[in-house]
Image (cartoon, rainbow, N blue to C red; front, side, top):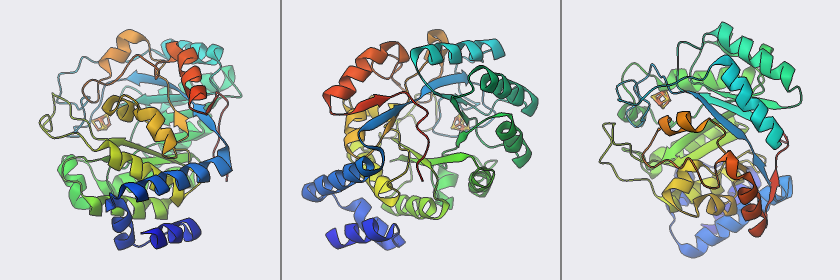
Length: 344
Ligand code: SF4
């Protein structure tokens, strides 16, 4: 296993079988070494900084029906969308707290046409010229991505969820296509976005092999950001009785992604913090370097329920920024509110 680990560190790529061997290795000594190599790789590029991004969940409407998601169109979730001015106010609040990255996240909501998104991004860009704008609103046309980029967006998050086509069909209805999703990611990269892919760990139908395919996909795409969290079931979905994904496996995957690209911007996700009380610090210890405190107005935040028991208060909430900063410091990290762009 150590030979494979060194091969990854030196070459930045492995075969599917090699990935599968590393992913499936549960030996505690090996896990410790993996974690320590990943943390060192991160420290060499970014030091002990943890970049904090203000997350604004601005619409819970979605036209899609992903089987794992509490916001799927068939769920009975109470819907909301923030107004143009409401989103600008949230950005302003984030800016006053010191954040220099805003992450605008939502379902695939047809209300937010290309015109509305371009106008919104343009207004954020002119009000906060030095802040980075990250968008995460799913699959759109190349023209749509281009317009948002021209309006001032810097980054785009679009998790691929799984790179295995059979597994993708277990997680999504036939109306959704893995090929289209992968193509969107390629287009985003080509348009010059700092692009984020990512996957759930332990979703129904997943295996070490499907995770190896995820790594091959990331190895080929070379995204600047990767979002990884454990699958957590939602009561109003077909997967309500499925088991939660493993925290240990999620941590292993974070370390492997860090070693695949030491420069990657890698969030320690709210899902990890929901699955394990110390999950977000454990994620940082495994090589992550981003946390996204939630700045969405509280009444809306409650309704943005993509999985059960999602944490909406506590140290991932922007109101508790002081507490989060102190906690990071206590674990040897530095809270960084700057833009925190990908360092190539
Ligand atoms: S995962 Fe995203 S696209 Fe799928 S239903 Fe949920 S919000 Fe919509």
